[in-house]
Length: 319
Image (cartoon, rainbow, N blue to C red; front, side):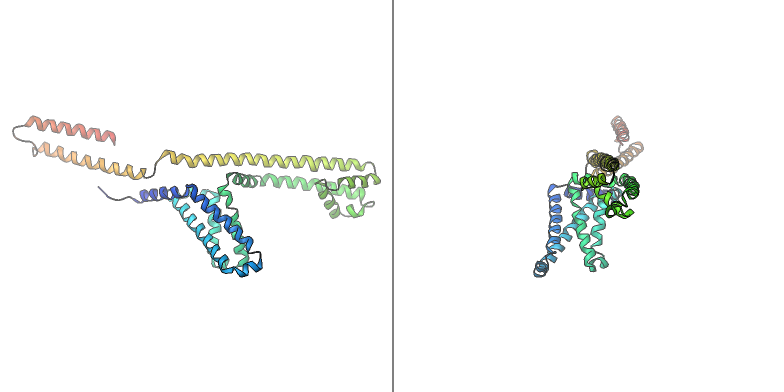
């Protein structure tokens, strides 16, 4: 019988041990604390006097944070040693890996501005430890296609009303509608309802029909389009919550389905069954040849041979 674990069994054992560490609450607290310390260090470096006085201490603290993030990433990689494809399918894992790996690139480490931007990107990793924030970020990402369509429709409405405003109010109110650019800026500010009363009063002095222009614009741009955007975001938020629930269920399912070291136990059981089969086969051959059969007890030997055959059949059934 072979001794020791095979390569898949070793990977499974490594993944089980690393998962025990990464799934511990203390591990998440340590990493989350390192992210907050990293964010605080970035803020302290904005004070030139403080940064110059405690430069060595700040650099040491930043390297300590980088060391914590490196150990965290190694443990997360080890936790997926038995299923590396699942690690690569998680966008958050790819984001963490890219941010951490960039800190070790020579060109990045020499560029202070890029390095600070990467350190700032680490702050976004708090979403990994805050499920609600992660859902919101996923919802924002999934709402981008709908937001692009909304922006196109909003720009079209804004341009049409700007042209109408230029035609109607260019001569009377050149300060706000003297060109298409001024008209676009004026209507864009009115979209937030800021200065709407003054604009309406100025329009009424020009023509009473201007109330139709402003009323229809406010109704369409400030109410209809904004509500459409809110609907797009809420729909994306529901999709993000459903996706988060599916991923959580998928992560819990392997844990319920198999315990750590199960692959090694199964392989060892198969090896033992093969050894028992070999021993029984040798015993049957010896009994048939009369090696293990005493001269005065043929019936007992036959009984032993029958028992060995029955045992072999039982082993075959278990296997």
